[in-house]
Every structure is written in structure tokens, then in C-alpha cells.
Image 1 (cartoon, each protein chain N blue to C red):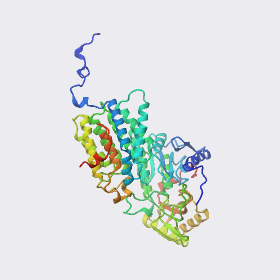
Image 2 (image 1 turned 30 degrees about the horizontal axis):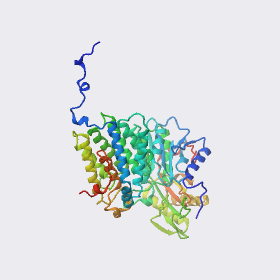
Image 3 (image 1 turned 135 degrees about the vertical axis):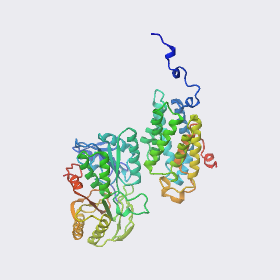
Image 4 (image 1 turned 60 degrees about the vertical axis):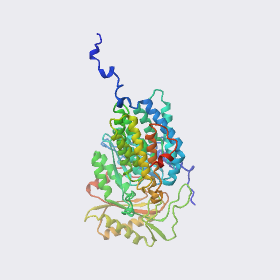
Length: 240
Length: 332
């Protein structure tokens, strides 16, 4: 039997080079790079995160977040074959959910789990998958922590990030993630003026007012690291 | 300063669980790697796995209630510390029935969050999971306490009744509805004449002058809203019982189940004395005491105190309560 070119699916013979949205999909390698930069951002800012958490929590958040990215990095490096985006994020989820004590680390694991699911159900980590995964992760974290926006928790960064991704439908993934990072950092800066009602800082009440929530900072670091490593929190926290 | 008999800080809980599993090898199994206890025998009629857990230091809660007719698994945390979500997740996967798994959770922020994270992970894997929250502690019933009433002694009664219901083949949604209603009809009050000693330091969690007692104490050394003179136990039990009845308001002829519970280092002599006083008060108030338990069921390390729990029941609840149970700490 001879191959008839007419019956060949034009989509497969003509790869999606002309579609800016689809070519911008984060494949396995780009997702792995993102998680590497997230780890680097966490290591670079660990001391600043710890200082924040000593003022607005119990002081172990920087250590826990670093333990999470370290555990995930070890699991990812152990793989022989390169992982796809869903698998990479799934490994991040397992590391944060299984290996990290306290509650904030495992809550990050729920975000990664939701992103992994969303990436796996479609063509990869598209803007649409990121929007869906972030929204689902946000919903899970809100259910678990009984936290609403304004309670001075990581929800205050994740909610605007998820909203930015939803609003960015149809734009390239990198641009959508940049918008998510902007939204998350705005949310972080807003937490400084809030009095905690849930989570780590709620036991401190007014005393933590003026201090941004470290968990929210962690969320912003994650989205920001899609574009590059964050070497210092100070410029991000002071931008108006 | 009180010296605990242990191999070192952090060793007490895993060492005790290993010994517990050997002592009750016919009833339970201990997975030391993942940190949970499971039942060896479970009724074939059960469609939903029952799981509970929480900080250690409340023995025999929760592992003591793992077995036929009660819990399928328990996840003990470190002393007075919530179990990790990984323990709850893996134990839930191990005991989930065809209709999933039910978590019986005492109302503490850490327990709610860690069981909640496990529930999200189970949902992600397509395992149905739901929760019954136990919040019976009357002393923490205040609009100022956003976290709500704490979960204490009633946990044993809720676990027993739900065990009976699960063995009857009740599905997950019905168990949640039924268990929530049962838990909602339980109230507890606890008093202590001396705090527990912290295993790390051997020091008492709080100091109390001789002859004084904490009225409304928690099971982790949380101090009560008020300190008062100890006085005669009859007057104390009457005040506690009236407070519980005033909140529960059992209807005429409604059966009540009572738990007189030692918090760790109150003598059996004293507990039966308390039970006698409780009966006297209930008789005087014409409340029908249908079932009772007297002993150490939910402790707070070596706290010198006791709690009173009343559960307003009906015939269905009593039937499930009476159903056979065979666990290390409860059997009939």
C-alpha cells in the first residue's frame, strides 16, 4: 500500500510553528528549568524568608521551602529519562506533600499536584492548563486551610496569580506567567498591611502587621522563577 | 520534675507503638515506616474504611480503638502534635473500602489541615473521602474562639457508634450525616487538679496551687477559663453535669450515654466516686442513663483530672453502640 499524502493529517505534517500560543507551551525541559530556577530563588532568599517568618510566623518557613525544593531536585535528578511537565510537577508535589513538615510546605504540594493534573490532561503546560491548575490548587488550599483572601496567607498571592492567568487566556505562556508573578507580588505587598486571621501569623495578631506573609512570598517566587531566578526579595517587596 | 521512662526524646511514641503492636498482634498491625496502625480483622459488610488520628499522649486513643467493629486505622502523631498528611494519606489508601474512607477528626487546626491535605490527595487519586468532625468540649464554646469547640472525650463514643454503623454496610454519605448528628449531641467538660508533665522537660505544663482546680481544662495542657477551689466532688460533678445538660437539653425519656474518663493519673477509686455522683445527679434530674463507660479512655499524659461526656442517643445509636467490638482498649 502506498502512502497517499492527501490523507495525511495536515496538523501532524505541518507542526504548530505558526501558532504563538502553542509553541510557547512549557515542555518537560522548560518546566524542569523553571523548577531549577525556583529552587535557586528559594536558596538565594532563604535567609530573607526566615527573617520574615521570625516576625510573622514560627521561623521555619524558609527552611521548609528549601527542604522541599531540595527533596524535589533529588527526585528529579534521579530520573534517567527526561520527565514531561506533568511528571515534573507531580514529583514536585510528592516531595512537598510527603517530605516536608509543618503545613505550608504540603500546601505548596497541593498547588503542584493541581498544576500537574492540569498539564497532564492536555497538550502540556499551556496558559489554559496553568490557569486551570492554579484555580484548582487555590480551591484545594482554601478548602484545607479554611482561608479567604485577606486572611494574610499564601492565598493572598495565589488568588491574584490565578486571576491573572485566567485573564491571560490566548496570550503566550511566558507572558501569562509574568502577569501571574506581577499579581502575586502585588498580593504579597498587600499582605503587609493585613492583620492575620488564619495560619502562621494569626497567633501574633497586630504584631505581624507591616510584615508580608512568607507563604505568599513563596508563591510569588514560584511564578516569578518561570522567567528568571530571584536573587533578593527586597526590590520585589518595595515596588509600589 | 518527673522522669519519663523512655529511650530518649522522640523515641517514646514509636517504641510504644511497636510494643503495642506486639501486645495486640491478634488485633492490629503497625506500619512503622509509614506510621500508622491498621486492624487485622474487619467485617466483610463494611463498605467504608474508618480512620482517625491525632497527637499522641491521649492513649488509649486512637490506636487502642483500632480493630473489629471500630476503627480500620489510626495515625498517631508525635506527642500533642498532628499526624503528618503522609501518614493519613497512606493509611487511608490502605483501608479505603469500595465506598472510600471516612476521617473522624478532633477539632484542632493542625488536625483539620493535615487530614484536609490528605483528603485532597485522596480525591486526586479518585478515592472518595469525607469527614466527621468531633467538637464536644463545652469549655471552648465561645464566640470569641474562632476555631470552635475542641474535640475531646466524645471521640471514643463517635468512633464506636460509627463503627457499628459502618459494619451495617452504611455508605459514606450516610455515615457523614449520621456521624455529624451523633457528634453534635455530645458535650464534655474536663477538670484537673494538676497539669501533665512535659516529656521533654519533665516539668508540669502549668502550676496550680494545692486545693485549686482548672475548670474546663483542655487535653494538651491548655489552661481553663477559670481556676476555682476543689471542694467536695459531689458539688463539682453536679455543677459539671448541670452545665452539660443545660447545653444538650435531652428530651424526656431520651437515653443518655455517659463517659467518666480519667485524664491520666486519677485513680479508679476516684473515677467510680465521680460516676456515683453523676448517677445521683442524673436520677435527680430524671435523665435516663442508658449506657456508661468508666475508666481512662482519652488521657492527657499524666494529667490529674477527669472529664465527663454525655451523649444524647436514640435506639439506633444505642444499637450501633451495643454492636460487638474487639479492639485493644474496648471490647464487648
